[in-house]
Length: 259
Ligand SMILES: NC(=O)c1ccc[n+]([C@@H]2O[C@H](COP(=O)([O-])OP(=O)(O)OC[C@H]3O[C@@H](n4cnc5c(N)ncnc54)[C@H](OP(=O)(O)O)[C@@H]3O)[C@@H](O)[C@H]2O)c1
Image (cartoon, rainbow, N blue to C red; front, side, top):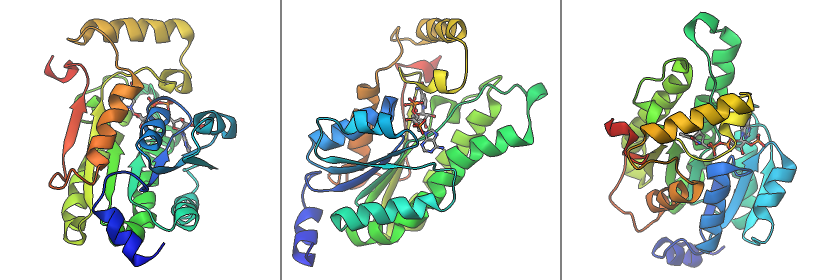
């Protein structure tokens, strides 16, 4: 890509932008990859399951996939370079891959904490670092996916909540640190949203149904969210037209935070 093309793009919309979306094989990440692709962007979708990523990319020529485990500290650099080599630039990093874990204090283990923080905190940090030189060139953006529970207590899931609180604080600090380079950093904090997260946490079907029912009853708008409703706001935070917003955490949770 020539520097002229680079400049032309930097005045435009999402068309031709290069977006890294982690956790693109399901839920919010899949919806986000689709939304960016529909907006004309090139998307590199990352996740461990090759088949799930292939399903995300099916019928979307704008989506390429990079199967990898983000807990491996070498992977973030490989992801950033794969996107840059494929399309010559990186405009947006969406740190969406994450896991939740039921872990009451009485059952808390060092392995449990480390595993959660490796994915929810360390991987987004190493990815942001790996993407940094590309984002500086494009004056790009980072969107971190937190949770309502990044700023609310979650009894029985304190370390999930703490990992998201860490991500929110990284968002604020990076926003100030990277502002001189024109890079914006924001976070989206979804409430309970339909996805594979509860299954991935290893919960039995009956418990999952109970949790979903209780959550829907507590949410003022009366239901859990859909991934597309969350993805739409990830796009808005990433959009180059959102020129003067940085360091913010936007909660989208049907009003749960107010209760
Ligand atoms: N759904 C909710 O209620 C909710 C609420 C608040 C916040 N969030 C946050 O939203 C984000 C997306 O979650 P989701 O709800 O869409 O859940 P999800 O369907 O479970 O998606 C998580 C994605 O992350 C990927 N992933 C997990 N471990 C990985 C690893 N080690 N390396 C690479 N990729 C990995 C998974 O793919 P593989 O298994 O194939 O790797 C999966 O596609 C998470 O950060 C979550 O904490 C979700």
